[in-house]
Image 1 (cartoon, rainbow, N blue to C red):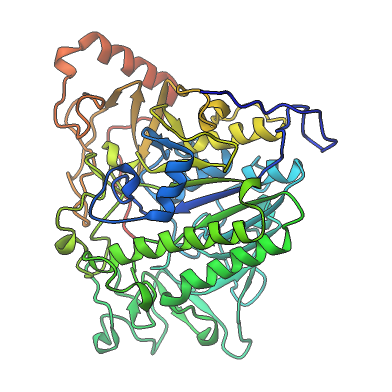
Image 2 (cartoon, helix red, strand yellow):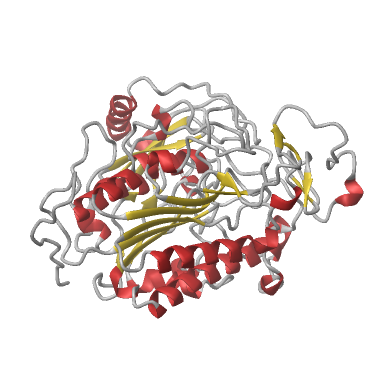
Length: 508
C-alpha cells in the first residue's frame, strides 16, 4: 500500500509546529449514541442496512478493534474531548440534565487544540458533559459550557433525549425561551400540578419500562421533572432534521475556513422516536428505524459536503460512544423485535458492560482521495484522536495526557497502534493487551435493569478475544504467567483506582 505523506512547510499558527498536512482538512467527528458493533452492516450484519455509514467504512479505514474508553456516554465523551482516561475524574459518570460542566475550563481539550491551530470549531447534537456550575438557570445564558472548553459555536441537547430539560441550547441560550413561561428543572421532586407517567398514564404515547416515569413531554415520559418552557420544548420526531439543518448551516458559514465539527447523533438512544418517514423501514421497530434515521443523517452530511465541493477537503471520523442496549427504559419492542439481529456483533455484553461489547465500537476514518480503503485490526481508541489529530495539524500538546499519537494507524498507513488499553464500565476497570482481555473480580449483580451483563466476575479472568470473540471461555488457569503479567501492568496503569466493590450507578 502506498504511504501518504503529510508534511508541508509550517503555517504561522499559535501553538502549532511545522508538522502540517499537505492539505489542511476540515475535520468532522460523528458520534452515534448506543450504536453497537453489529448495528452497522459494514461489520457483516445482514439484518439491517446502513449504506451511508458503510460508505465511510468501505472508502476509508474500517477498524475491527476500535474502542471507546467507557461503556457509557459521559465518560467516553469526556475521554474524546480531553484525551484523558475518564476514571481519573470522579465526576465522569452518567450525568443528569442539570449537572455542571465536568471539564475544567482550564483543561486542554480537542476543540481548544483545533482552534489554536486555525480551525473554527462547532459542536452540534448530543452533549452530556454538563452545563453551568451546578445551579443552572435555564432562563439565562448557561455557562460554562461548550464555549468555555473551545467551541466557537454550539447547538446542543444538555444530556440525553430521555432527560429533562427537553430544549435545545444554542451558544448557551435555550432556543425559543419565553420569559413569561420560565423553565424549571429538578431531579429530586416534581413541581405542583405537573403531570407524570405515574399520575397521568393516559397522556402517554410511549410506555416506560423502568426509570422513565417522571415528566411527560410530547407524550413521552422522561427522567427528571420539568415545568414551563412550553414553546421551547423539542419535538422528538423532528430532532434529526433539526440538527442536520444546523450542521449544514455551520458548514455553509465556514466553507471558506478550516473547520472542526463535533456532531453528536442522538440515535439510537431512547426514547426512539424517529421521524414518520423512517417508521417501518425495518422489522425491528423503533430501534431499527432510528438506526436507519442515523444513517440518513450521515448521508445528508456526505451529500451536502459534495454539493459544497468540500468532500475531498474533509476528514470524517465516525464512531459510537459505547455498546448497544435494547431495553433501556421504554417498552418499544426492541428486545422482542430484534430477531436474528445481534447489536453487539457477537461480542459479549453491551452498554454498561465490562465485557467487550461495552466498549468495542464501530470506528471508521474517511477522507476521500487521501485515505486508501483498508480494514485494520490495529487497536485504537477514541481517546487517541486528540494526540493523533494534533500530530496532523501540528499542535504542541501538554504533558500528562493519556492520548497517544497513532496518526499513521488512523490514516491506514500502519496496521498497528496501541499495545494495551484500560477499559471502563461505570467505575469498573478492565484491561486489553494485544488479543487478550483481563477482567479483575467485582462484587455486584450480574445484570442491571436493562438485562445487559455487567461483567462482575468472581475471580481474575482472561479471554483470548481473537479466537474467542464472545468471551465464552475464561482461560486464566491455562496461562498463569500471562495473567500475572497483565495484572501487574493493569495495577501500574490504574495506580490505585481499582476497587473490587463499586457501587452501581443508578440509571437516571
